[in-house]
Image 1 (tube, helix red, strand yellow):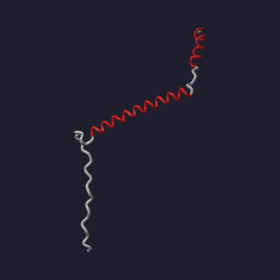
Image 2 (cartoon, helix red, strand yellow):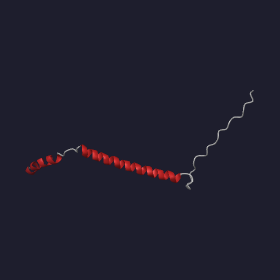
Image 3 (spheres, helix red, strand yellow):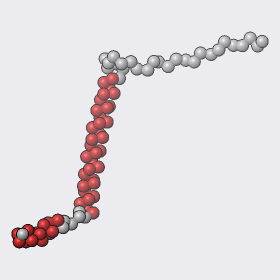
Image 4 (cartoon, rainbow, N blue to C red):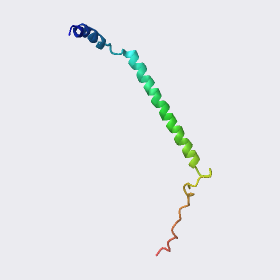
Amino acid sequence: MRRALMLLPLFALASCKQPPDFDERYDKAASDIEARARAMDADISEADKAAAAAAPGNGSQTKGLPAASTASNAPPSSGE
């Protein structure tokens, strides 16, 4: 019991940790944002590569959009 009472102030002191200051929080947030940006860039580049591979003319079996056709006009009216 006496040992527990002697260790109690040490535990209390160990639990009193200072919260991070602004600079530490800013650095952590900046590194998190940079990591997310790198991950997004990697995803975008993978999507671009996949889109380029699936583009017509690259030997893929997917077909592109059909060629634009000219609009047909109705026959002229006889006036009746």
